[in-house]
Image 1 (cartoon, rainbow, N blue to C red):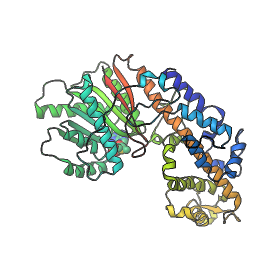
Image 2: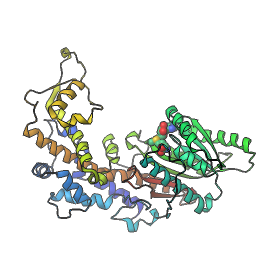
Image 3: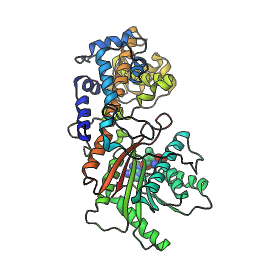
Image 4: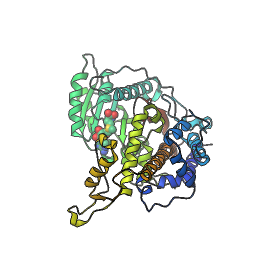
Length: 459
Ligand SMILES: C[S@@+](CC[C@H](N)C(=O)[O-])C[C@H]1O[C@@H](n2cnc3c(N)ncnc32)[C@H](O)[C@@H]1O
């Protein structure tokens, strides 16, 4: 099994009948009275109402806590396939698919050392602290162990946010250019700076507010290097490393593309040379355009939303998961219990999105229905004000549907990540230009579910 074949297996699985029909059925549509049950759904649709907590059954089977579950055969087979195909996510190990891991040698690499102690922990949440510490440790490890990166002193933190990572790297003696589009983040970074200065710092930090595009990124680095060389009187061609922690949506792919073109050179002479890029993506829902769609599989906005779920941690906090599932199913139930309002009712344009509502509202259906229908400019259908048994059944079905879709989301995320990895291998010139590696940086239970770093190291 090679990398391309693994990608094909993921795609084939996601377009096979049951996964495809589940991914195509948004809960809001499945709750509509006009919804036609897709072929192959009837057994599990009925099983969901006869089982006390269907999502717990599904997730327990997925987590291998309940191997003898009574969940219907097609669902258990689908979950077996998900488990074999999804990338493993254990911290400090390369993400490889469980079912094929042993054969995907090219994904193996780097024994990351993550025992780095944070120097600027103030004001950081435990989650952020974990992420920034693990990212710093990974960068430090690479700088110390990779022959190409020995002596690198210049780092560009792309999408630096509040600059936690930037300050950490500066405290290690690096020259850091921190770039972010947001003024608010820049102000936060300034405040962060006053907590982080240490007397023996050797490096420098330049924080710049700029909206980055593939063309502006290299230009901004050009300007920074020129400014820096004037102030430090450096004469040699500096080696630079790009880092990006949780670069949202297409920002990740833009950074990867720009990094590849900087390493390739493309005939352009620069006053610096890019030696590596270390990128952790996030927010797939913010991916734009078709520029990075896997070969024959078109990712819908639903796919991208589902790719960002982390069902592997649902059983760790069951009460919270119950509320999250209730949110999805009650919003969908509005489709079954309301009708469009009349323009004469003083609310001419019914809305599709409910927006934010308080968690407390999800305690009582009647109250939820009343307030939500006003927000959506809809009218509750007579007789549906209470929560009849029919709606309770539909709620269970819809939350089961959502749980199944989220389980499939882990294969969608694997497809997105592996597609990026395969593309990098294609443009690496067989390793002549650079090596590409994947690594699970964070523990998903302590930090973001988006824990995979993509690293390019030039050759
Ligand atoms: C999820 S935050 C991560 C921030 C920081 N790296 C961290 O981990 O704390 C993503 C950051 O990227 C920035 N960003 C997104 N798109 C950008 C763009 N095109 N140019 C510059 N910054 C961008 C946002 O303003 C935001 O601060």
